[in-house]
Amino acid sequence: MPTPRPALRPWWLALFAFVLVAMAPAQTSERVRLTSPTAPALADQLEAQGYDVLKGSVSPDSLDLVVSPTERAWLLGAGHALTTIDFGMPLGQRPFAEVPPAGYPDLATIESTMAAAAASHPTLCEMVDLSAAFGAPSTFEGRTIKALRISDNVQTDEDEPRVLFASTHHARETVTPVIALEIIDRLLIGYGNDPAITSAVDDHEIWIVPVVNPDGYDYVFTTDDMWRKNRNPGLTSVGVDLNRNYPMGWSGPCAGSTAEGSQTYKGPAPASEPEVQAIMALSLDRHFSKVIDFHSSGRETLWAYRCTPHPFSSFLETEAQALSVAAGWGSTSRIPSAEGEHQIWQLTRGAHAFLMETHTSFQPAYSSAQTEAAAVWASVLTMFARPVSVTGHLTSASGGLPLAGQIDVLELPFPNGEPGFLAEPDFGRFDLVLPAGTYTLTFNAPGHLPSTQVVTVGPATSTPLNVVLSAAPMDIGQANTATASFELAGAINAFGLAAANGLNGPYFATQAAGDSVVMTLGGPALQPFVLFAGMLNRNNATFAGVGSLDLGMSGASGSFSDLAVVLNGVAPATFLDGLARLDGSGTQSFSFTMPSGAPGPLFSLQAVVYQAAGLPRLTAATELARP
Image 1: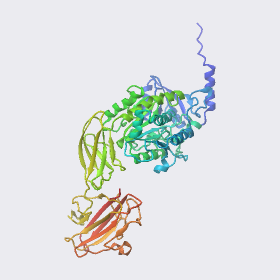
Image 2 (image 1 turned 135 degrees about the horizontal axis):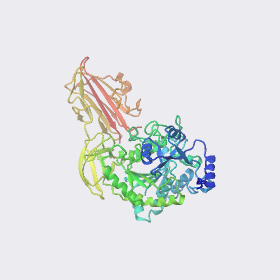
Image 3 (image 1 turned 60 degrees about the horizontal axis):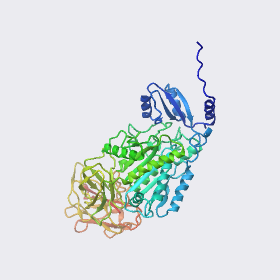
């Protein structure tokens, strides 16, 4: 019987492989196949080590990865046999009209589309440069991140929930900016015509960031269509995985890789990357109540944290499944791939935040990407329609001013030091999405006494709640000796309130611009003393300079020339070395006026009171916050 001849490899496949190798730029990404009888377990192991295992590629005996040249060398050094499947090259320049075909917009096209939308709908839409608006740094290649803000009165900051949709943390996931542009298009065209869209725009401030990673996205079009990271030049390898660079979990066991050459390198420090800093600056200013971060691929919605416990993860899983169902994916969902991800950081600030892995590949046919965007639109509408469980405002009893504050849920405590639910400073607004149940909410704000409220939350209802906080005592009085310390009642009086005995540390008071503030130290029971005043350092509570009067912004040096300071009617310039004596009543006072145009919101004042030489010393510290 003749020996069977080995099957011949088709000539066109051999030629195709040759052309790929010939066209591949040096040092681009590479898709490789690793064969192993334990491929599923090996895939989990490699993914835990930070390798970029491709979703859907894992079979019983093989798996595919996208690797950098450094990672390829690591795998070969570990004894793995690799087969090259593909090389990265400029998007759309593959031979034989291989996918992806023409249609995907490059960075310039995306930004021009955004600008055209803003120009066509000036009352509904504006284009925002995050660097110019929020002080975010430019990228390593000098670009800035652009966003669109959409609302019914877009030029006015209105008292309404704020929602964020972000795409393209990972450069090669070109389907995701198509989804972002689809959201923009549908919101603007549907406004006034579709009741659900009109309600979404009227009732929310909507932010859309189509390309979080502009340097990387441009590199996909010009050089390497498998590129994932940003273009941080690094020390030994280029790029940081932006979706491993956010602070929450960055230092934990489920963080990204510490190796620069890894596709999932988490960066040299949390939030080290300018792109991440831009999204964080936007978020810290806007205080989003709902967030979706779009990625590909997998058609599944990611919820909660990876390793760190979340107080209501099972509820978030149910909510994630609803988003997947709306997109037509079934109830597919899972926990995140790692910590340090964008939506995880948003969760720490009380946002209802998820990551949606869209489509089944990074760069499907453009028509397929458009179909996916249309399907995901249903998830966007689902997110808009999801009622906020508890919504309201936190204000001060002193003048009804809005308060920035923290809201603790007794039954669902954040266990990892997260800020948790917050009231934003512009309107004192808070929006909490919670599982159905009865909750004990405690509201806290600087300079105010806490308030506890009990609310009952339904599965699909919104409970209004407005909370007013009373001002708290603002000062400290403590006498210290070399061997012991004890409180001295009434030693310090500020804002008409006596010292709060038993407390130690700075207190906060909200003062309107132009208000006069008087602080009085001493009293009839005290021996004569000398007064010194200076700026309070919040970090270590030390004095900026004993023997001088120095009023300034907390954490900064120097003083503000527009602070009108009076010390017993004498200006500081003529007040020798900050020295004063008791008046006839045994009391020393000094005052200043909050300026109308002060350069910062937080001012500090401190004083040291010396009695006769060798006797105990009194210290006082107060922080004054302008609204």
